[in-house]
Image (tube, rainbow, N blue to C red):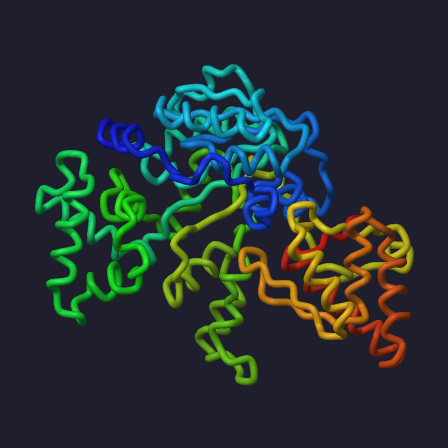
Length: 424
């Protein structure tokens, strides 16, 4: 911990310029939105106004800024062990008009000393570095309010393996002993470029990252990262269970798609089909991670055990009155100027529009005539039935039945991907 502390004192993370805002960063706002997290759990829209949010391990405050901008009216608190990082965070938030954010020099394990509980806790890129993640997570669970949500991520043991091996090599060579900086960067570069191209470490931890070979932050967050470790899916679920927590959903759920592992036109091998039929959600994820896991992070929302309620896919079991009383929303985090310009361009050009946010779901396309349906959501939510009827009217050229099927499929896919919210 002392070496980790010195690392962040020397180089606060992330090293993003203070002037950079998150307002037009759809991904940053979506990932840090209390409303998004609550909708993924309950299917309900929650106003962040007056809610209390903790950024645990806030570092230089860039994610804290994202939390403040994504949750207007919320009370934001940040804790970190590095005073230098906190000083940067205070300047960053004040520069963007959030001078009332409270920052405290405090390790996560002692967060109860604040005497507060939180409706939402953000703990990114931190827990896997601590010497005792169980104790730290238990402390966060104790300050998480009833019905609160915690966003947490951990390095995936399989995807992180190349850099874990790289760190072990540098430890053997003594490179990590004395707070590595530029000379050690050059030593790593010299060693890696001297290796044959087919050598494992070069193939997996060096050559794929050519654009970063002269960036100090890349070395610090990968090659020189003190205390780094990876977690498997079973270890992740065991960690949550020990703190009385349970997973709500993966943030990047679409990237863990079991169906994508096998050709859709062929039946599953019998042994696989039998396993899928009886496996738990944790076992499904572990299977995917073993077979094809390549995501650096296991990134997810979790909450107190027993608070999450199973949700059926959209429209399954709906009655006619459900369609009449439901409302459709465009998440505020996605209502960015670039998306609006794209939709306006599609409406004018007559070309299909695309929704593409890799952090929510796969690319989703829609017909140019219907772009206006989405643009109308910039004015606020509207009755679902009005959205559906407008789409069908605009697409009358393909016939009513085809238009109904089209818009129903679009809304279902957009809701599953996090592009639209449909609230009963």
